[in-house]
Length: 125
Image (cartoon, rainbow, N blue to C red; front, side, top):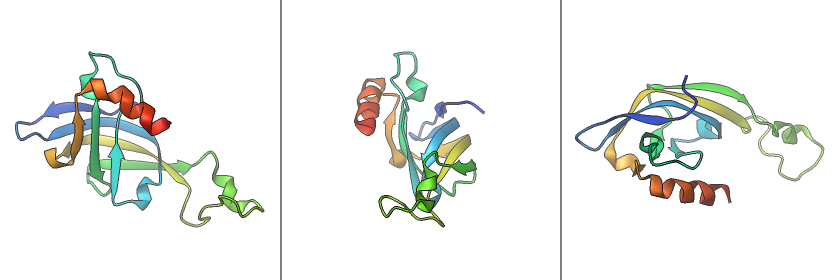
């Protein structure tokens, strides 16, 4: 699969079709929707990677590869600080997008690379 999520088609009704993958999506399987956004700064020729949107986690064109978090041993340590849920928490997913159509009503950013850097920096701050 492609290592980044990108727009492969823009429809006349404002919807987009996404292909690629998102990595290290902590807790996505415990949610009703996932929010996806760029994971790095984008250059002017990367407008197809400038997407931020909400997608139902049960979308039929999504596939999940479930793994462990790098810090998931916290739930078994002998401390009461930040242990999480040892039975249902702590999963991390790689999500594969196979031409996932997203309606215009669920899109927050569509090709606006000028906002991608600020969005990434605010999210990771």
